[in-house]
Amino acid sequence: MITHIVLFKLADPTPANLAATRDLLLSMEGKVPQLRHLEVGVDLVRSDRSYDIALVSRVDSLDELKAYQVDPYHAGTILPHMRSVCSAIVAADYES
Image 1 (spheres, rainbow, N blue to C red):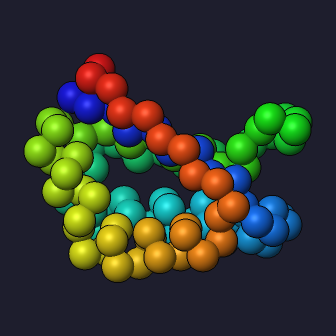
Image 2: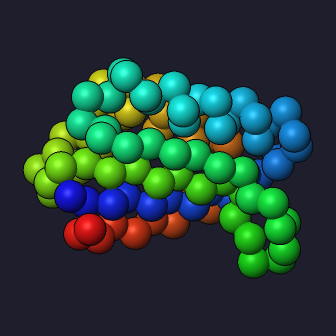
């Protein structure tokens, strides 16, 4: 199993933008077949070093992670939106 963690810093982290972006990320549930687990949360601490939204997902293998990256819904809907609203994005992937 591969755990994929992504942290997003929004350019305009208003409550409405945070909620809309969280909901869009959660919309991958049932639309991206590679995902075995998906959770998305909005940061509560809001410190200078905090990112605004965290995504934690799990897929079965590295091949499934690669397939997730190019999945039509992920690549065609999620990625363009995230690139348009984020000032920074960081990720880590590890075997779990």
